[in-house]
Image (cartoon, rainbow, N blue to C red; front, side, top):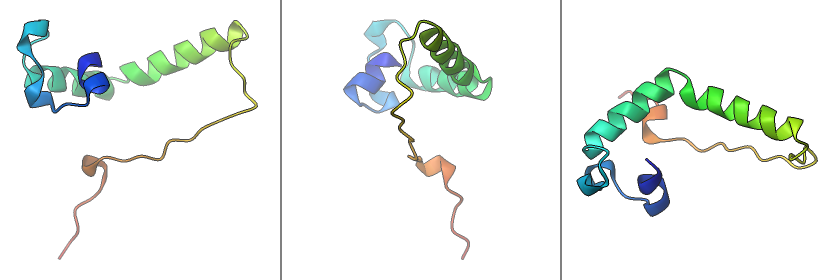
Length: 77
């Protein structure tokens, strides 16, 4: 997943030499982890740890409103 995010390539083009399986396998794993709430929990744990260590500056915030094509309902005709 990191390779895909850093290099901005399609899942189908993920090099199998990396040992993570095919792009489709990685995509299915990512989807299952997302549905299971893994990334939401990880994000909360990370923020809590950084906040407890005084490493977050809450004076600044950023809201990401990006969406993917799968988030948008198809147009009815």
